[in-house]
Amino acid sequence: MQERRLHRLFRTRNTDYFLRHRECVGVRDRATGCWLRGHAALRTFAVELPDDDDEDAEAWLGRRLTFCGRGEDLVTSPIEAIERPSLHTVVYYVSHARAGTIEIEAAA
Image (tube, rainbow, N blue to C red):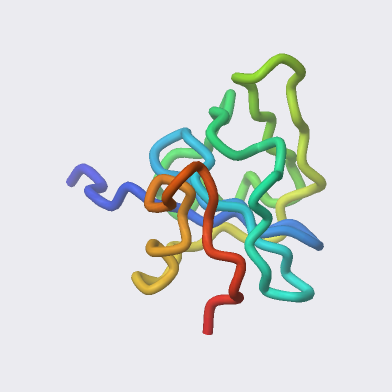
């Protein structure tokens, strides 16, 4: 059966990267919970991603994501976890922001 969920969360040691398909739509600092409005990965695209199945995702732990789309590529620190984000985080994504910003408050 084909996976219908569009959003995934990639956790590194310091940062959470929220992707819709291949596009980075949100970046959050793990220590503070603050959304990073000016992060270079926002609105860029992941070059390669694991398949949606759990087995492929597990093989990606320790690898790095590469984003491209605005000049220089950005490479993350190693991936520690791949998850499905909770529904309440979607409102913080840059695609839901007004005037090109996301909410600065931390998600509960």
